[in-house]
Length: 134
Image (cartoon, rainbow, N blue to C red; front, side, top):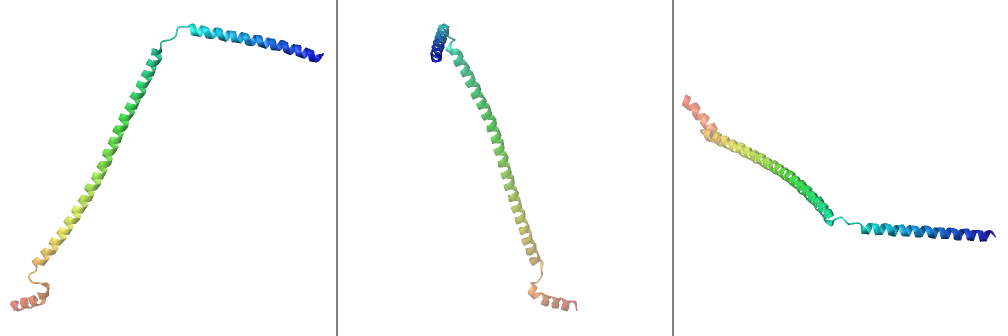
């Protein structure tokens, strides 16, 4: 007998469940009909908002690109200035070395030209200087 009661209770629960599902289905259909019968918003509003957003995004990209390009150009000019300064310093160093070598060469030539007699003839010149003083 308990089995029969359980079956009856289950059938009552099934019927209640079926009724609940029918009510839910009818409320979903009613809501859908109400939503579809409402007037729709114009599509232009959403397109306009996308255009505005896209315009702002492109404007931001352009601004960031301009700033980045300016910074890169400034960095490039600084690097070129460093390279030019290093080249100028190297050139000045080479010019100073050449000047020193020229001065040394001129000093040697001056000392060689300023002698009255060659160094090999020095003893003879000293003897002649002694003879002329006597």
